Amino acid sequence: MTPGVPSSQARALVWVGIGVVIVAGLFVVDWLAPQLFPASLPTRAQDGLTLAISVLIESLPFVALGVVLSIVVQVWVPPGVIERWMPRRAWARRAVLSLLGMIVPVCECGNVPFARGLLMRGFSVPETLTFLIAAPIVNPIVIITTHQAFGWSDGILIARIVGGYLIANLIGWLYSRHPDPDALLTDRFRETCDLVVHEPGGKWRRTLAQFVVELRAVMPALVIGSALAGAVQVLIPREALVAIGSNPALSIVAMMALAMVVSICSNVDAFFALSFASTFTPGSIVAFLLVGPLVDVKMLALMRTTFTWRTLGGIVVVVVLSAFAIGTVVNLLA
Image: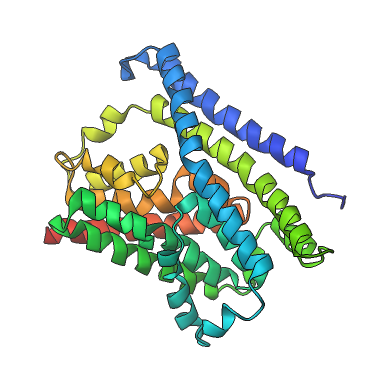
């Protein structure tokens, strides 16, 4: 092992330590201000465990599908097949890749391993980020469920699709200006790329090896992200968010915060948001539907397997500010 580079065990311990500190801090808040919560701490702890397991179970099939698609792209699709269909201009390539999610029927959880496969295949970081951000929203299942929940009312469906597409291409353009795009990736992922490129043997051996590599990279992050999502949901009073639902600006902020907390799969999050439609503004619903699939705590934990914290911080800032602006426009027009 290279001196100064932490082992996988050390990285896992760091993740566990961060999770423990966050959960412990939330319990301290509960202990200092018990009047904020109607249910007892043991009851909410049980609810938090149930929610964490449900988020994990909900995500697992899509993660598995994403890993399989990632391996197909890396190992089984011949070189040049995808690339020859891509435009030569950088902005046009990003625009096309941001629509790739329309033929990849997985939610945000499965898109992360698929995006890792694109990177290992040789696509640039800005191009891959454009796909990764757009895919959970232009997914055909997401479009159908959003239409089932809201129809064409208040322009919520159109604002979600167009907004997600524009945010993805904005992020891709911003990071295309970075002087060293490879610096946006973690050292561990770059090491994984080197191992995959030099993996000996035939396609079946490479498939098995890559399957193990991807599961080892994604599963710990998924478990930790699910646990944090469950803990945060029951340890932050949702009533405080709902109380400000009628304010045009604060309602957007509240729903974006809620979206980052609840970590619901983008395939079904529209039905969850529908329960808030009678008390929250249309713009805040749009902001919820934009922020949740892109930067909730589960998604950030998964993306951390590939991108640095600084990269994720920049993505969060762009997504939140863009979603706020789009939500404000919807409120003005609705």
